[in-house]
Length: 359
Image 1 (spheres, rainbow, N blue to C red):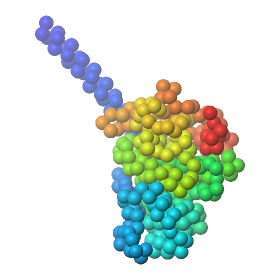
Image 2: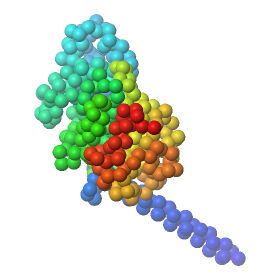
Image 3: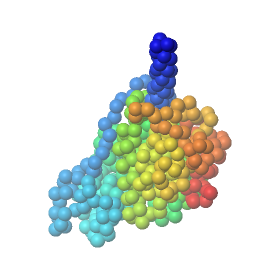
């Protein structure tokens, strides 16, 4: 009798171990494919760029106006906007000239002044000088480099969209001619073109993304840091009077958006090719934004096991009916980076969402 009970307990324990092992294997597979790369080389752990922009110490020490400047580490975008609203043009330009890296990256600074400040910063940058002459809303050369580029007239457009990319994207790779619809700049151009130029689109490569295949791609560490930056970025748009954007989140970028969702200033939240959003359902995101999801059956992301265990994996599939997101048609899309290709149903749907016409 005792031996029978022991055997049953051992069998039960063995079943649990096998189930746990299968789950761990699924999580490992997630680590291998969620990075958004074609290869299987090991990924390198990336230190997340966080905190206030470069040059903040000199900015804090500047008393040229006879009073302290807003602390980049603690001032809200609304407080920054109020501060700059109280300055005349000469004082604004003087600050941009003295502290271009701060003014160009500080959320709440007027858009045109940020363009000017970042142009100054890029003029003397040996790594990313090729970005000069473009509408650069943010530029941080630390680490692999971060950038946000505007396509269209952000200050006059009735609608705004933000593209949040996945892995292997930085200031050097956010605009690659070899992969026109797999980079945030290419996606932004395609979306703006499909709206007939009526929507200003921001290619936001504003966080440290995973590189290659590794633990970074399967965990939320970099996404957590990115979520903080994305939340503040959208708060900055609101602080200067811009409409709440439609935020499009590709691949690992959807993990960023999922973590940012409760505090994100967004009208619509659209995920495509998502490995998960670290939430069990659209309702669990606790966002006022409408949530949409697109996944092409040919996308390799469809093979990602939607699990989350011991910090590995990103949870439920946002494109599954049970998640509760609004479905986006994907006819014509191909693979993991084909959602913004011209002629696809997904691009047409994205344009309707960006313009506030989708229901």
